[in-house]
Image 1 (cartoon, rainbow, N blue to C red):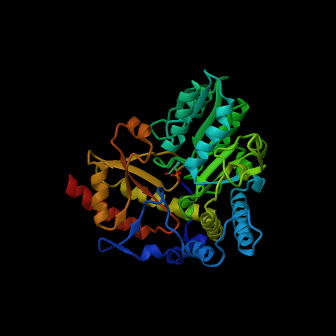
Image 2 (image 1 turned 60 degrees about the vertical axis):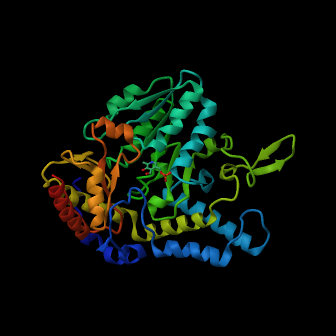
Image 3 (image 1 turned 180 degrees about the vertical axis):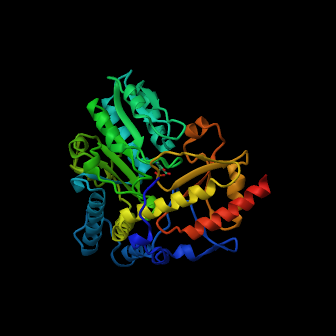
Length: 415
Ligand code: PLP
């Protein structure tokens, strides 16, 4: 947590960026909204909202099956979105990008279309203790169905994975390793490249859950060299109901469809069906076309600002807020890894996180409380849940000050 650049040196015009997001001007409970729940979902800039209105206003049509003009415009926009995601992640080819409903669907897709075919009873799937439920349940279900063992890499008290320990958990029976790039509860940034290299050295295929990484840092798929990587657009200033799954092309070409139906076939007869090649094989039915348009616009928007600048800005907010929080009596920050994204989870004495969240809400401050879909992790720390603050590109130090003042009052009131 010790990067030294100053936001002002980075020419980061947070005021201007805030004015791009219409929702940020609203009041909640008579107070100016302070939105610190970006880990759950981010707000949308007007350009993203407008891009979807424009789609419905000017070129709404079904894709890939029409010769008429509107259908071609819509198909082009949809396929351009795939290319935008490919470039954003620096994947090798747009043929490696499957457009899905988001992270959860992407992980389920990999469990069904890839891993299910590869397992024998007694094999092992490895995950970590800091996974979101979306990166636990699909593997747990598969383990039950295929008589496979789910093994879990523990996190230490700082909320980090210990690489030496991780290495010991790889065995000849391990067929797959799924881990999160950034923890949504602890903020820990895992050393993804190093972990992927270790897994590959043991012939283990790797999925990285990028839901909390893509909004906060440069993700370079070719550099990471993982087999699968996924994220959700709604956490990256885009719309809900859309996201993407990267799959290495040679792996993708050997996967079976996740769902079957229109849009994914070469030929259909009652005797046999053959499927198209490439990502479309995994996109049965009419997809979320306006979502793809909005997701691509969000990525263009972030690229224009610069993801490195956003990361630096959020890092400064993290350092500033952490030092202020640590002055509050009874404060316990959960997740103190050396390398963290702009996420802070905490508890104060034995005050229930829900009570803190509800009183902050009365001041117009939106934070998340509870287990954050990481129940096993929260239980490991022996707490009922946390209050979580998660920053986005539009948050400011002034908002942190408002939050800290409100939190101090809340803690006094509840003590
Ligand atoms: N993985 C992580 C680390 C997350 O933070 C989330 C959402 O909070 C998910 C997966 C699930 O994302 P979605 O609900 O968009 O599918």
